[in-house]
Structures are given as C-alpha cells and as structure tokens.
Length: 549
Image 1: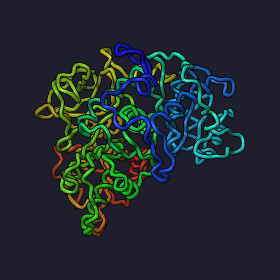
Image 2: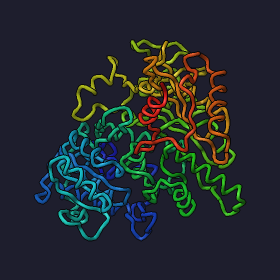
Image 3: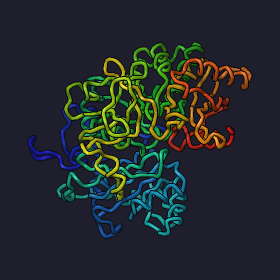
Image 4: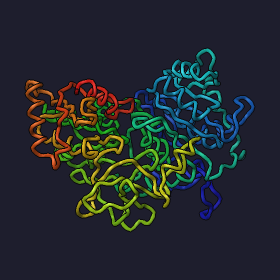
C-alpha cells in the first residue's frame, strides 16, 4: 500500500492495487473475477494483484525483451486472464493496446501500422487471426496465449510468465503523463485512430465513475455483483470492467456473449445489479426479451436485484425507456452519451434530451466539466439552433497516438475537444442529439441531420428500427433524404404500401422541405451494422446511391 494518506497514486497500478478505497466492496481474499461459464475459474483481488506484479516484472525481464514505452497488443475475447495481462502491461510502464476480437486481420494490420507493437497477447480463439494480421504487417511478433494449458506452435503460454515475485521487489516508476493504453476508435467515421489514455487521465476517469457515477446510479451498497459482457476493447467496458469495477471491488462474472438470452440468464443466475454498458440495440433486445417472458406468464422471473440497465453507442428510442419503466419498474434504464476520447459526458435522458447545467455537464456547478455548442465558424449558437458539441475536462484524452495532425485539428483554441456530434439546446437547458456532422444529408439548400427524420419514421408506428441517409443523385448532383425501415415482427403490411405510407407521414410533418423523403423509403429485414454494432451508414449510402437516380 502507499505509505501514508498524503501519498498520491502516480499511475493506475498504484490507484487500483495500492490505494485503500473507502467504499471497497468485497474483501481481497474472496472470489472477485469469476468465469461465468466455469465458476471454478476465478481470481481473488489478492491473486489478481500478485499476477499483475508477476507479469509486470516478467515483461521487463530478459525473456520477452520489451522495455518501458513499448506497445503490447491484446486481442482476446473476454476472459479472466485478460485482467492480469492488461494491468501487468501498464504496471511495467508499457502501453496496452486492446484490440476487438471480432476485427478482421486487415483491420488489425492497420492498427499495427499505427501502434508498432513489440509483443502480442492472444486468446486461443484469436491466434490464427493474429498470425494473419502479422503476415500482412510483414513482421512476426512474439505471441503469448491465454486461456489454454498448451501453447500453440510458435507461441508461449501467458501463465508461464506469472511466477510470483518478492513483494519487496519494487515495480518500475511510471509517470502520470505516460501512456497507459491505446483505445481504438470505432472507425465508423473514418480511418482508425488510437486514443492515448495517459495514467493521469485514466485515474481521473476511474475515480469519477467509481466515486460519483456508480455511487449515484447503483446506490450506496458497495458489495455489488455485476455482469461483464461484450468485449474488453470497447471504451465503456474498459472504463468499467477493467478499471473502475476492480478499484471498487465489485464481484464480476465474466462472459464474452452479447446475446440477450445469455445476458439475462447470467443476470438471473448470479443476481447481478447490472450488466456493463450495452450497445443500445442489444439493450432494446434485452428489454423485449424480458417483456416476452413476462407476457408468457413466467412467475419465476424476479429482477428485484437489478438496479440499472444502461445503453450506449447510439441513441435509444425514448419509447423504449418509457416501455421499460413498466417492464422493470425498479430498475434505472438510461442511455449514456460519450466517446472513446472523452469518456462519459451525459447519462440521464428525458424524452431523448440530456440535462445540462449552465455550460457544465454531468454535475451542477462542477467547474471541471464544460461544454459549448458552436457553428461551423466556432461561434456559440443561440438556443434552438443546431451546433457541434465541444467538451473540456480533465478526463479528456490529450492526443491521438502517432497522429499529431489529427490531434491538433481535434481541439479549438480554448482547448475544447471537437466531438463531431450535432446537438440543439432546448428549454430548461436540455440538449438533444441530432446526429454526427459526418452523417448530415447534403440537400440542395443546406445540410440536414437524419435524426428528426428517423424519429418521425418511428412515430408512424409498427417500425422496429430505421436509418435515414443521403442518396446522391447523379441527375440532380445533390443528396436526397432516403429512409430504410425495419418493420416490427408481425407487421405484415405490403412493403411498397408501407414505404409509401411512411414517406407521406414523414413529409407531412417535417419542419422544413429539405428534410422531406425525396429519396423515398425502403423496407428491409435488418439494418447493416459495423463490427461494433453501430448502424453502418456507409453501406446504406452505397445502397441509396445505387437505388436513386
């Protein structure tokens, strides 16, 4: 432990593993990180700390040949061995680069070009993927493999590097300003970028989530059981599961699944207070599943222990939250708005709009958390007008790794980060998300955002999901708004008649002529999605361009 109350942690290892958390949950010698599928596999906090220290020392030893500042890539499905690997890298002063295990070899190759890793850690399921990526990269990197007792040919076992070391043997000094990890952006709006999360920034995020956000949302009880699902390489999973929840000593049951049936099964089996933040389309499916079980008359469905369901990644239809209030009345259902660069910005939404506080966000009178809405010239926009959202806080990243040009253009002269998100300020200082600047439809007169069009499509009724994009017309040489809609199950209306009815409904209600669906409406069975679950508007725009003259 740090020597005295006046000692301040200088890095994530010291904060999470050497600082006494006054709201600590489970004790250090009971199962804390548990494999949901095989509960015989687990770590206590003490075991985790021992393995983190062991791996940190092994990394800097003669066998692996890495040094402080080197990047180490981790490509693995969720597994309890991920925790000592991730934290061991950072405790050694190296830089962790988590990679989503569902990326393609070409995607990983592109990330390797930016990060230049010196070592790779893989799961048994991702070994071949990493070999394929390295072949494209043109370098064969040393590889450690987790979640197995026998290393595949050409690799070494991760667990072979977890030999305990003397507690008196100090870890190397790691500066607060040193990179802790690199988080890859989703790639949905352009080339991949690696967000450089320094130890100082990540420590602030950990404490903010653990001591303010979680305390408010999950209550004062510290000994909570939670479900970790999805993939560790996503920003919200990393902030919660890998960092804040370990700091808070929440008991985590760990699964890789994002299937709503599996999530609900484990939530019920282990009586979890919450799963980690879910993509909004997964959260919607989970709520629909709970409702269907209730409607079937299953009296064994008891979710009294479920404190929170939180979605992120894309907006959630306010009607889903309203419906959820009747399905899980004792559970807080909310949508977090954030980004890899900024962490969480807004959490609670009322009718799709987020509360703000006179230029502050998340907390009233919190001088740390500033925002503003500006036009294309950087000037503040009046209430009721659309503007790009800019943020400034100590929890915002400092740079993109090896990308000084993109870093420079991402901040204004006052140090505010340009999010690329378009919002409008409403009454009572609530702001409503309208879409990404890059998603605006370039009509004849002016760009229009797709969100109001999509909201009207959903208001028609019987629509499960929709997306509006610009269909570039070679004939007119500008974009026409075009909507793709997915009917609710059981909506058997003729697709052409449904499309015509939705178009007429929307066109009669849009506030301006430029937002009319002059590109038409098409009924499809499902929206295309990216690897991270977001609506793939690039594909939709390609479809639209091919379908519209």
